[in-house]
Every structure is written in C-alpha cells, then in structure tokens.
Length: 88
Image (cartoon, rainbow, N blue to C red; front, side):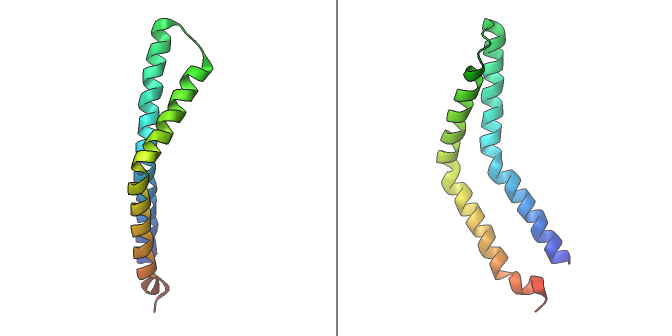
C-alpha cells in the first residue's frame, strides 16, 4: 500500500512539473497584457486570449520533448515496478 501511495504522489508531482511551464508563461503573458490594457484603457477580449494561446503553443513546442521524455521515463519506472505493486 505504501508503494501505491508513493506512485500516486510521484504522478501528481509529475503532472505539476509537466504542466508548469505553459501555465506559468500564460500567467506572465496574461499579467503583462492586463497591465497594458489598464494603462491604455483598451478592453478588447481577444487581446488577452490570442497572445496567451500563441505563447502556450510556443512553450509546448519548446518544452514538448522534455515533457514527453519525463512522462516516458515515469511510465517505464512504473511498468518496471509493477510486480512490486501487486505484491509478487
């Protein structure tokens, strides 16, 4: 049971680490656009959506190989340790 808890904990940490770069960049871009909109008083909705979308796809394009490698490494470790999880 302890090993299963450890695997679930590692999976949750992996989700946070893998989703971190796009989320952080979306927050930064959203903040910068909000400051720009507040200073210029331009309240266009697409002004905040489109740049965030472009940045998220850009970050996923750059960090995609790293995220994929990290997920693959976790999956291999999980499959290697599967017999210990079921108790054999």
